[in-house]
Image 1 (cartoon, rainbow, N blue to C red):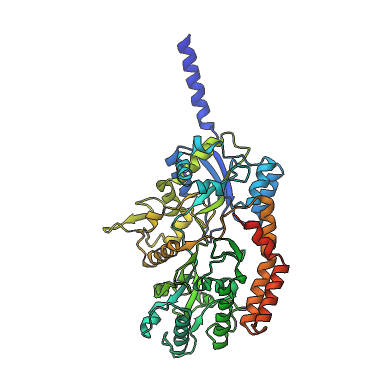
Image 2: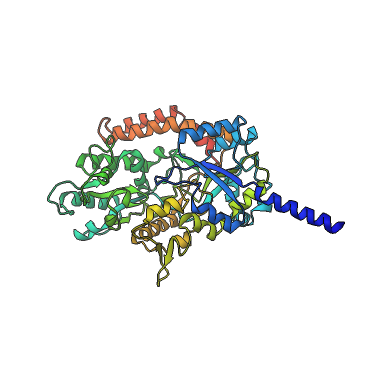
Length: 493
């Protein structure tokens, strides 16, 4: 009798197995390449790696995705998890408070040994991904080797003209002036742009040359390490005086505050547009110039007046809001076990480069490159097999692997980013404020930021003459807008 019951139970299990539910994933896909999650090899390979089946469907329209998140907060929950979720901190709190997503804090240690080990080794990372009440709404991207925003100078032109790498702002000014007057691109036109910068955001990356590392709140650290309002530091006025000088001499183009970037030349039909930029700001030179010219540029990490080289760690190591588990998920632990594979190098490589032998291969020197032919190029590989997109991808970035890519420009850019990180500083830690204080800080920063940008532009272009009186009046305007309150919010953080 017992044997018969056992046979019946086994038969019942066999009948049930084909109907086991797969993990339903949805999220935002904004990659410029066409990418269909439902047919992507990435999810098939993740099933092979984890033993967990998934059905994934991407939302490709930003507005549609935001509406879907709002519907979730209202109780319309469909998928088991949000993959590449791109959640803001406010959305995390809203979705948690509404019950649309679950608190991951009590689940991570049991179900995610790989991420748990990383958080144990870096307790500051756990603090960043946690809300002030200790809840964890989503999983992060951990990227210790991300590219950094840098000032790049055309070192090929420096060498061609017999100029040394600048070490002071005066030397930089002289070098840029020489490059704009000497036709280093050899096209017999006066089309070289000294400081090819558009907008105050790009110009502010010159601040470290004046000893100031300022963030998007326009905050910096004073000599005592305390938070201060950056425009109140003496070096800030020196920075504006440099812009005035460059604008007057034509080193900074007349259209710098109003025009589109010269990078628009990349979209021209000309097969070989001339390089025109002596100095530019970007995460990589190839956002401005043709890729075969990108290695002409070197990062310009000049010391400040005190002889110390500083830089702003713009992107940080932790990007939050990447993966959340909904309350519709019958087994949250399973969703986390699937995601935990992305916190290993093996899983991360699947997302960033695909599968060895099918998507990429190593050469005799230990360098890897994508496998392409007449039927499949790199765009096809990214579309059909890969999943990484900016800061919304959960997991780790396989930095050691990426540094072995057989690409001169990628190695060049990654090496430059490493130099910047070695001297990088963060003014304020991500999410160091509570939710209410953060909302107030964001509102103040938006209003004050507009006044800062406008003031710099008006001084630089000569609309307002820079004097002791006009500078003091500008600082008073910023103070009236709440700069002291903004500083106070971050004091001691």
